[in-house]
Length: 275
Image (cartoon, rainbow, N blue to C red):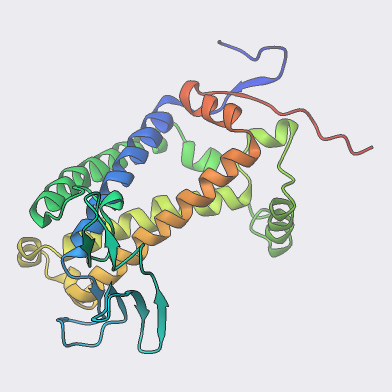
């Protein structure tokens, strides 16, 4: 299709955006699942230069001596997670006390070396794919045209109005649906220019070999353990973004939204009847 069909179709996503979207979806899921297996090797997080079993962790997931799963945040917040996290059964019915269960990790069996291989290979896919996407988006002006908010859009009144419309499930219709709204622009901007670069940099900071070449990253993030905590928090931020993103796709019309990300062509929803 080279032009709109009966005025209701438009070319919304160029091929670099579509390719990066689906490649990123696969990459992020593999990295998250392999990252959870890496976390299983030491299911505690610390702030600062050092961290070991007897140091105070700000987050811990594991099993207790009396056979319970536990999510612990700081010194005082404890959430029972028996059967889900920290204390669960594998497919053979054996009780395991690792933080995350087999169905959430790659590999599904405990293997720190295997998880690290999966994680590092797809880290290169994430970094190189992201670099090519940024270059393509600068050339075709995707960032400036589609993701850069206008002065009116970043006004608190406009943002609050958009939040209320989303809470009421009142999504844009007609020509307005062809453009990213301010909540989309802000969330995509945070992911593309915030979470993903932070994950890459903190991941490099945790590598002893890279520390010898660029020790400045250790100083920037306050030590390897702080970098590990930031890495984990960014990963959880991506998980939250994915859940919200999928929910919005389902609520806005999954066929229309998925088709546009596969073919590039988007069918405008009819204008809302205000009568």
